[in-house]
Amino acid sequence: WFAWGKDCLQNLVMLFETTLEGTVKVRPWPEWFQFKDSEWPHARAGFVALRIDRSANTPGGANPDSAKRIIDLREIVVQIMKTMSAWPEAQTYMNRFDLHIRHVKGEDLKEWKKSQEAGVVITRVGKQLTAEGGTLEAVPEDEGFDDEPADQ
Image (cartoon, rainbow, N blue to C red; front, side, top):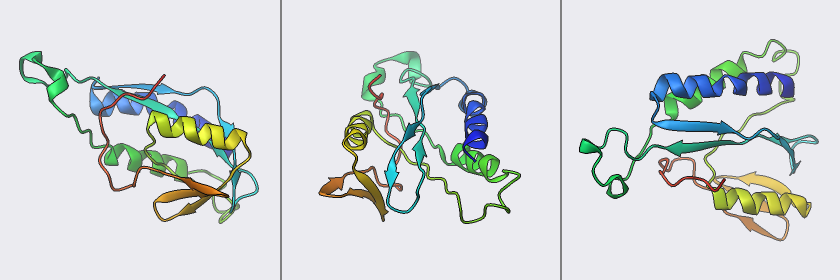
C-alpha cells in the first residue's frame, strides 16, 4: 500500500499543474514520516506544500495582497482518492489500510512533527487530532483553503 501511495502521489504535481493552470506551485516533501496512531500498528504521513500565486487572475495584477485567494481543491482531492483507491491489492487487504487527506498549515505541521519526535500517539476524533496529555489543533475539514504560504 505504501509503495502504491508513493507512486500515486508522484503524479500529484502533474494533476495540479493541469487542473489549476499554474496558479499553484506544488512541492512534495521527499521524506515520509512514521508516526504513532492509536488505531493502526503502522502509520506514515506524507506532505505536499502548496503555494498559491496571489497575482494570478488579479485584475491588472494590482495589489494582490488585498485579494484573498481561495482555491477549490475538491476535484483534485477526489481524483487523488480515486487513483489511490484503485490499488490492485485493495480487496485482498480490505480494512487493513486507510488514507486521510487534510489541509495542514505550516505551523501545525511543525507542532505535529515535534509531538511525533516526543512519541505522542495520535487519535483522530471528529475534526481534531488528540494526543495523550493534550490536544493538537487541526484545521477543520470543511474550512476553505487559505492562501497563506506554508513555511519552507
